[in-house]
Amino acid sequence: MTDSNDVLRRIADALDRIAPPVPVPTDWLLHPAYVWQGTQAHAVPVLQAPALDLIKGVDAQKAAVVGNVERLAAGASAHDMLLWGSRGMGKSALTRAAVAAAATAHPGRIALVQAVADAGLATLFATLRGIDRNYLVFIDDLGFDDGDSEGPRKLRSWLEGGVEARPANVRLAVTSNRRAIVERHMREQDDPINPRDAVDDQLALADRFGLSLGFHACSQDDYLAIITGYAAHYALDFDPADALEWSKRRGARSGRVAWHYVTELAGRAGRALQG
Image (cartoon, rainbow, N blue to C red; front, side, top):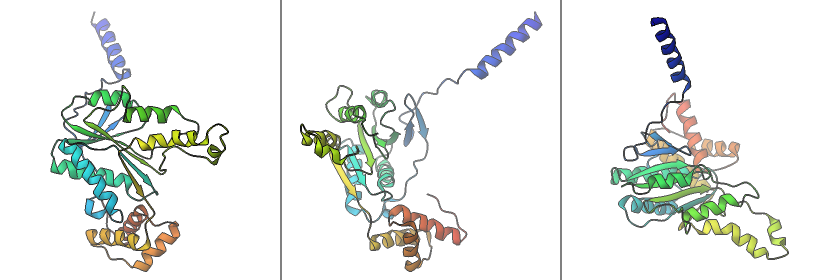
């Protein structure tokens, strides 16, 4: 009998090792940020974001995003946001920083949820509906494949008008390199039936966002101002000519390039940075 019990115990232990662990229920009231994985969420205990005063060169955009997220956290009317434009100009960083600032002003009242457009958004919205907290669902670097009409239409329905539209305590923040989000081609103008219909159908998604903000490549002065802010914050010295040479080698001036240069400065000084 002992041998039989021992065999059964080993079999049970082996099955436990093979079986996937039971998912731990998400506490949607506890953490400042989450990553939605299609059917469940991974909690993020610390929301990594730069200080708002370090985000420079996009003052008007920053004011609009911060104000909108502040209203969402306070439970007032707020817009879904489309942040579009040049790469590396702080669209994602600003979104995270605005949520972090709003969470400080309104403890426990807002959280960021990172998701992707085709990974169970309807399930996420159903999960968040009715929870006594406000959420900014963040879809970073959104784009659709050429010829994909279903993805944009689903997102339009979630933004407005559909039976699965996002709940009142949820707003969307989407970043994209293109203003219309979906890719456009010259052949749209050659549509023999109605070329304007083809263009309007693609622009319809962008039109659903109450707040649409463009981020453009920064000037030389803005680029140096971004570096100056970082350098002062981290007590680093820099030569503007060296900073400009860095941007020339990268072929661009942006907040991201500026941050990479500051990382280089810190490395030369034998220091480590957080960010």
